[in-house]
Image 1: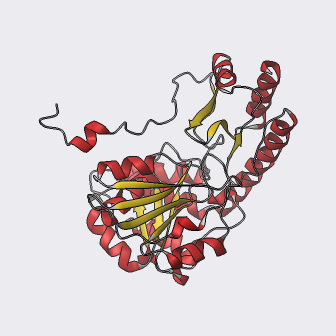
Image 2 (image 1 turned 45 degrees about the horizontal axis):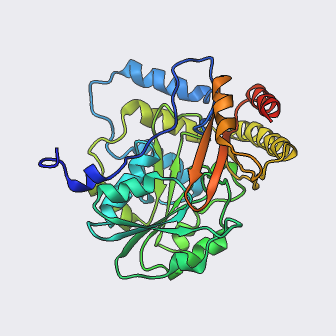
Length: 349
């Protein structure tokens, strides 16, 4: 194997997604999916596209989505790049800006895929620990000679915490390279950074439809960046990285503001109750701006709690970060799902 496979690939562990059980009886609160059905406009768009036929290649740049996004945020369509989920966009970004032996920076703890992307490139990754209150130290924007790209998830996973826009602009202006603000969960927060792209061309904002649009199974995302960056990333992406059904569905989803507003209201109400109840049960829970909560405590081990929940048919995400600690990340499900989860946790305790 060593004779044929690149040494960087052999050495890396690889990203491991959250468990995807086949049984529909499982209460699945481990991968931050939206528990509700997507907008009916999405399904109608998919039906109409399928009826029209799928014999031709899809639009390689997703013009209809670029138009809808540009209208929603009042931005230039040429500043939008479509991707097969945000993971595709993160891959394109890494391949565009970071070469072998160069440096990609990210906070810690956070989304572990970022490190895998650096490893695939033969690049190095630098982890800058969050402060204990989930703010960022000044070392996060320290310039180094090989630094080529910085990832900043906002809201962050697993904490659900946010860095204020003013701080993000300050960080970007001091960095010697682009700053990617990964806003996978931004629709559940109070503010977003898309408008910062015009204030600082080093800022790139990445979005996904998996969470707030209930389309994790569709695989669609987009990023907003200065057109000069998008032009270069167009060279790196797969020729047809988004299929016709996904493009039609994404355009319909983003255009249905009423559905998104109603869904967001439900998610936030359940998130508030989940946070309050977990705190009542003795957990430390930072205020979340995402569709999940991060639950820790120092008096008991949490892996047995995770295992007991799993044995009871409830999946949450157990995470243990070296030099940081363990915790349970619980996705915001339906009211009934969260009721069952909370009841089991109370029994376990």
